[in-house]
Image 1: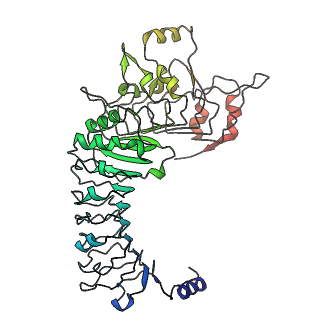
Image 2: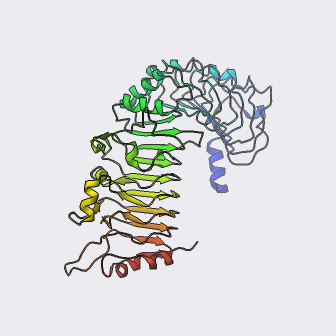
Image 3: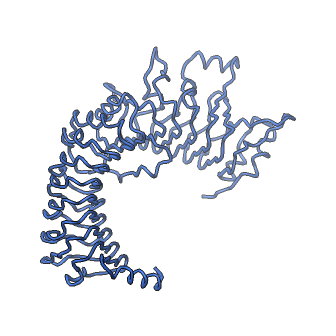
Amino acid sequence: MHDLIRDMALRITSKSPLFTVKAGLRLLKFPGEQEWEENLSRVSLMRNDIEEIPSNMSPHCEILSTLLLQHNLYLQRIPECFFVHMHGLKVLNLSHTSIEVLPNSVSDLTNLRSLLLQDCLSLTRVPSVAKLLALQYLDLEGTWIEEVPKGMEMLENLSHLYLYLPPLKKFPAGILPRLRNLYKLKLSFGNEALRETVEEAASLSDGLDSFEGYFSKLKDFNIYVKSTDGRGSKNYCLLLLAYHVPPFVMADLEVGKSVRLFACKICEREEPIVLPEDVQYLEMFAVNDVASLNDVLPREQGLVNIGQFSHDLKVLWFDYCGNLKNLFSLRLLPALQNLEVLQVYKCFLIEEIVAVEDEETEKELATNTIINTVTLPRLKKLYFSKLPEFKSFCSNNGVLVCNSLQEIEVYNCPKLKRLSLSLPLLDNGQPSSPAALKVIKTEKELWESLEWDQANAKDVLNPYCKFVGF
């Protein structure tokens, strides 16, 4: 902050009610008790290097409404008596500190509206919240508590609840139905999730603006999806995780209905994964029990039933899927007409994107009785990288029609011979670039080796190339 502006701010805030702002000053010591005047209304000590609060400190600040201590990474302990005379406190932010236990005196802050403890990685205990009836925003995401705080069922005014807790074994039943005003919910169900809790979370889906659910077991994931009748909240992100990974933030996603599968098995013989019918973003990371997206879809008479697959899908993203041979079959194509992004990275066995599933269609293609054309009218971005066996987009010399393409990125695909693009034609019959195309990023050697179905196609696309070396 500029010195002049800082001085002006200090003059303004020196009158009653008093504000104290000492953020980002690299303070090592906590302000002494003489600095905690009775008319203090707001205090910001965020982003400093404070390590401790004196053990006998108990400021008399009854009108203090906001206390911001986040990002004091070395702060480990807060005295039990510290909050005793802060009954007017409405916002308490201790996120990104190293506190291990929250003092019991927090339980008596009956005016508290927001309690923020995100990424307090050493925090193992939060006292009872039963008296915090005014609480609207509770963030315990990324803490290390093993049980939810006692009295959670009393927090009927909660609108935002963030409970992504890696060590949590189970979330008790009976709490979620009491939280009738929830607007945003982020919840990990734990390794010992109760069916009743999963169904309770699903019953809230219609009223939530966003839901982010972390599942440890495929069984619990499927129970949730089935209990929502295949359609979740207005915005949702369902994650099936075999192990703890850093939490994902809903705001980071460009689409509002997402499923992310990480290092888990989704093709169990007893019950394969059930995907929401309105999913828009589907990501598989290190999912090694599928050879194709078709493997996880319901079938009738041996063929994929596309009626039970989302027609809203916008993003398909596959990373490190070791046994993936292709992404989907021609039969699935009608369900992918809204696809905008297709990304495949380090899937070492994949040979093609679109495969022919049934013998009858394959014979027709082989005899040229039908044309193998893959049309994805809304596709904007193609990204293929580090795919050593990748040979073509479509089997049987098929072509890809996607006139909305904006970006193409292809790297480290040594066996790729055809890009399979069918370019739009001018009135004179000559190919032209897709109107929306902005850039093609690839290696010069790969680009020069590609074969083209349309004459002059390479010359038309050359101006868009940006060659990258590795």
